[in-house]
Every structure is written in C-alpha cells, then in structure tokens.
Image (tube, rainbow, N blue to C red; front, side, top):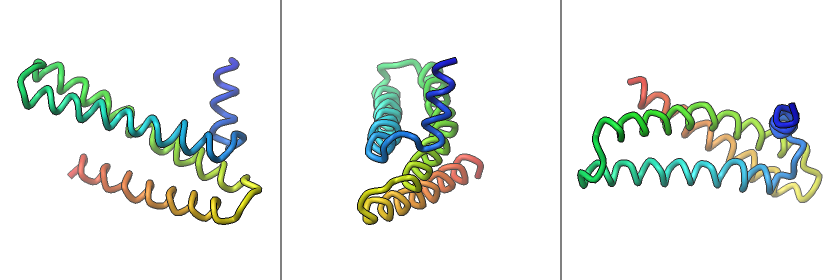
Length: 112
C-alpha cells in the first residue's frame, strides 16, 4: 500500500524536479538503453542465444513503452509545481516535449 502511495505522489509531481528528472527519468532510460545495447552487442558477436536475446529485447522495449509516458508525466507535473528559477521550469517543459516527440517516433518505428 505504501508503494502505491509513493507511486501516486511521484506521478502527481510531489517530489522535487531534480529528483524526478534525474533519478526517475534519465537514469532508468540510460539503464534500459545500456541493457538494450549490451543485448544487441552480445547477439551480434554470438555470445548469447538469439531467442533469449529476442525475448529480453522485447521485455526491455515493453518496459520502455510503459515507463516512458509515466516518467514524462511525472516530470511535467513536477515542473508545473516547481517554485524556483523559471528557467528550470522552461527547460523541463522543453525536455518533456522532446521526450514525447521521441517516444512517438519510437512507437511509429515499432508499428510501421
């Protein structure tokens, strides 16, 4: 129950903008990208079975498809509630718009 409350507070933007952006948006995206790159590298050099690599790649893509909109929503809500320098709020909103654009670009590449 506590985890659900923390998750809802995160989505509502109750945490600081720096925490929401760096710890819950950038770091997980980098980790998923690194994991995906490592899987592709091992698949190209035949150090992992192609079936296992395919399933793990699919799992990472599903995590990305689910987690990215949630993190963008959390960053947007946190930026709206931010009471500091207006520049950070503007930069966060630009990053959210860019993230939405890249997210839809990836979804279009997957579908088509």
